[in-house]
Image 1 (cartoon, rainbow, N blue to C red):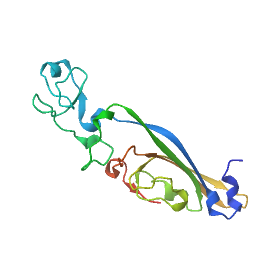
Image 2: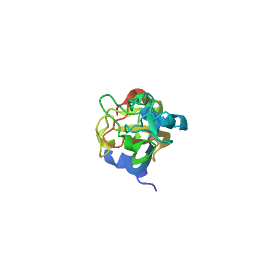
Image 3: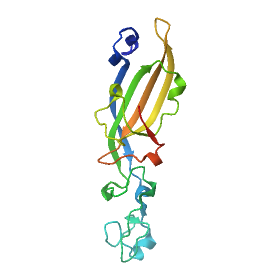
Length: 183
């Protein structure tokens, strides 16, 4: 028997929650900076790369790079909040390891009340709280809902959710990730 299923008859609310952590890789696409790889023409034109040096083929360039300016990052495609924050250029086109938090809990609410779970955290129920609880750090990536019946014939909803932690000091942008949710 899977841990948590016997919780229906214990009366202890904490038995209704299962938590786990795993790792996840977030790939930091060059487009999140408004950057691209330099072509032969870019190199021949001596455009400045993101480090302010004349580019070679394959170096990263910001969209508005020129011979006299490296240009600037354009974070409009980044899934993170970037107002007043720069994302390190050193991680362009790299997979960065972060954490997935999974939480399974049971509720007597109607299954339809959980259908629209998506977006970025605005808060956590104390029973379902991960170690990191700063607003904007978690983005919903999966939810599975299933009705189940306990031994007394009561209908429960089993809610299984997965969320990914924003790496470093970054926060997910709710406007680009499905809005803000609260538990």
